[in-house]
Image 1 (cartoon, one colour):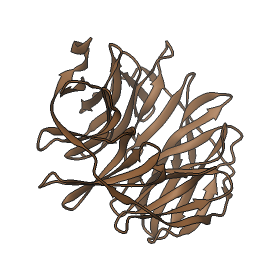
Image 2 (cartoon, rainbow, N blue to C red; image 1 turned 180 degrees about the horizontal axis):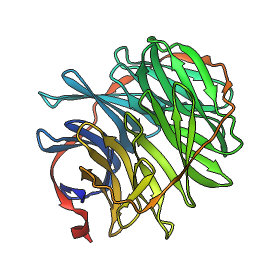
Image 3 (cartoon, rainbow, N blue to C red; image 1 turned 180 degrees about the vertical axis):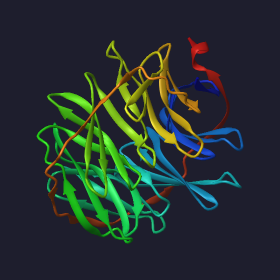
Image 4 (tube, rainbow, N blue to C red; image 1 turned 90 degrees about the vertical axis):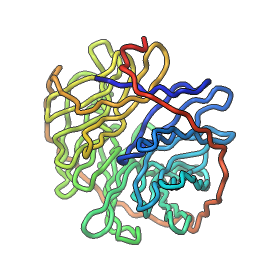
Amino acid sequence: MLECLVLQAEGLYNSAFFASDGQVLVGRVFKEGKGYQALVVDKEKGIALILGGKGDEGLYSVKECGHVYAAVGHSGDRALFLFYEKASGRVRSFVGPKGILWQTDCNYAVGGAKEKLWHLFLVDLKNKKGRALSVGEHLYAYSLAKFDRGYVLVGRIGQEGNYDSFILWMNPKMKPLRALRSTWKENDYLRYTNGSWAVGRFEIEGDSEGFVVGIEGLESLLYRRQGFDYFRHVNSDATLIAGEGEDKSGVRKSLLVHREHVFLLGEDFSAVRFYDERENIAYGYVYVGGKAYAFRVRNPQLRSEFKYQIEEKPLRWKSFKLRVEKDFMEFRSINFPIAKASYFWEDCKKLY
């Protein structure tokens, strides 16, 4: 059952969840008269925090880091990270240069820094400083994960309309070890990695296919059918994939894939943005009656609506080199107004 988040406060609309780490969920919500603001939900305390300033805010990743949760995203056109203290409820927020942060692992965050081009943006959360790496083309990372010798990052590189996926191996100090790009003639990029697998999308003659890459052996798999597909999350053994895909009417819906079998969720436009493997809960957003709601699906029972044709796609991965564009890009502390709201979960079908 698809359950929608209902925030019990006036003027809060169009919520979405983008990430979870156990007891804390993050995303954004539209606050009437203020634009989008960051959303933090503490499941244990049963409260929602709405944080924001004059620009739109959103949080795309959260990670439990001892006694605090680290979350990253953007504030207006600037990169944002914050620490939420579990016991006290205190929030410390930091805004940096133009850009966006997509994921964190407690030590580092990755994303893009924006100048004339997008640059790969690496942020040391402890020192509150960032570093931009460039290649002379647009380059930014969507995801990072630890592996036995450091970190692996994935994202996209290239020009608008012709992006390549990239995989970048880094040492524990976030210095590049090896960098590869896909060299496919159309758009493709990788949206998430767990260190063993990466997923994203891959265009063939304008049709977007689900894309899965094994990090160690670089085996590339396409999950093919007619219609738009976009993979956003994968579990540890690549048996469950989450994202979004078109139904027979061309409406993009939340997508869960068990092996090659597919289940679409929601009555209108929606997407799964994160799958919590430990708790077996999928999170995202869904439109109901013209409004967006953050949703969850607990213990999803998959009933296959169709099957993908899974094909191997050998790619000519090509090495590329990065250079430091800017170093020691500092973040400054900022005190966002914070409002609290209670919430409850409702069967999404009852909101029509």
